[in-house]
Amino acid sequence: MNGTLVELEHDLALLDRAARCAVRAHGHVEPNPMVGCVASDRSGEVIAMAHHERLGGPHAEVLALQRGGDSLREGTLHVTLEPCAHQGRTGPCTSAIIDAGISRVVIGHLDPNPDASGGVEVLQAAGIEVEVLDHQPSRLLIAPHVVRLREQRPWVQVKWAQTIDGRIATRSGQSRWISSDRSRGMVHRQRGRVDAVLTGIGTVMHDDPRLTARHGRPRRVPRRVLVDPMLECPPDAALLQTMDQATLTIACLEGAPEARVETLRRSGVDVRSFKEHDGRLDLRSMLESLYCQQAISTVLVEAGPGLVSSLFDACCVDEALVFVAPRLLGDEQALPPVHGRMPDTIDAGIDMSLHRVHRRGDDVLLRYGVSSGKS
Ligand SMILES: NC(=O)c1ccc[n+]([C@@H]2O[C@H](COP(=O)([O-])OP(=O)(O)OC[C@H]3O[C@@H](n4cnc5c(N)ncnc54)[C@H](OP(=O)(O)O)[C@@H]3O)[C@@H](O)[C@H]2O)c1
Image (cartoon, rainbow, N blue to C red; front, top):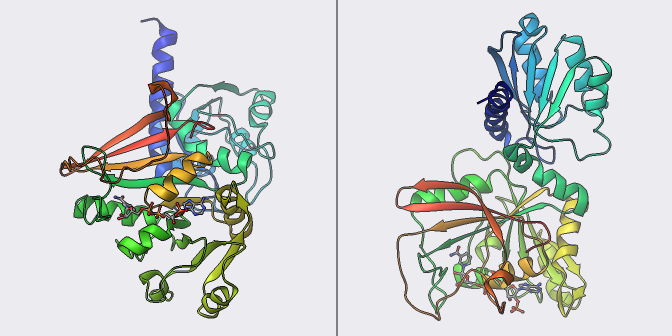
């Protein structure tokens, strides 16, 4: 191996460390991106690591520089995102890097935000060597931010639990419980890191979920959002009986019964009506409204094939979290996670890329990314 390749592998390994550090912020910093930084001294020894810890707080580079102090003079920063060159909630990171006497900065991904980008040019103008690498973990970290900037909607994760033969409920609609206690604990933790948990009226009718985060101390208390086009949610539904635990938005069609709208609003529900798109509630408009009017930046979908399929059809799914439990149903009429598609060829299916595999006891959690515009 030549020296350049060894150096590249070293840079990528340090960016990997920075990315692992960044994910500690999940649930603390959104709608900001998660960012991690590794700071080394001039001999290459890692002196400090940091991540952007909270919205409005110092950026990862600034924290790493503070932790490393004078020993970082002529040192190197490996940072998952291009350092900002603008005054936002905090000062420009480029100034802190220049003041600290850093001589090299390795970047995992350029900043997609036109207001914050330009850091590379500022650093280079100050005589700092800058390298921007194609680093997949950095790209995954910034992906939610890219979706928010480009589409003005939240990052949408759909989650389902399925048997080995790909069924999420029996033909009668019974799904409790496909996955293990441990997997369900993980779902509760994930609920406590997002701004909203979204479901459909079919799931409320069958499972009557509360959709609250009940594992450990949640980082966020997610708003529950229900797609209920004609406001059929029963008054004794757990979602309505737990209004003291988390807020509830119900999305309905403009033609939903007015009396029902009034009753729900009187009980504290945020009822929002949406126009139709191809005869059904326009899910993209609903997501845009959640993002622009209610500051919802991340959504976890826990629904059946009705809503999940509509979200795929609207190209509004970014990530799928699939729990596979060690069980077979063997019934072709049991419910699949997605339905209603009729691809003629395998290539016409929805392409996903496998990002991570976690084992939880006998269950496996597969995390898939959906290519933009492909869902
Ligand atoms: N294993 C799991 O992880 C899991 C998770 C959740 C639910 N489930 C199971 O899934 C089953 C429920 O499935 P489901 O499909 O009935 O539930 P759902 O997806 O929660 O809700 C379906 C409802 O949403 C409506 N909907 C979807 N997209 C819409 C749109 N764009 N506009 C207006 N309405 C829209 C559907 O309307 P239409 O009637 O017009 O289609 C339908 O009434 C249950 O058996 C439950 O146990 C399993």
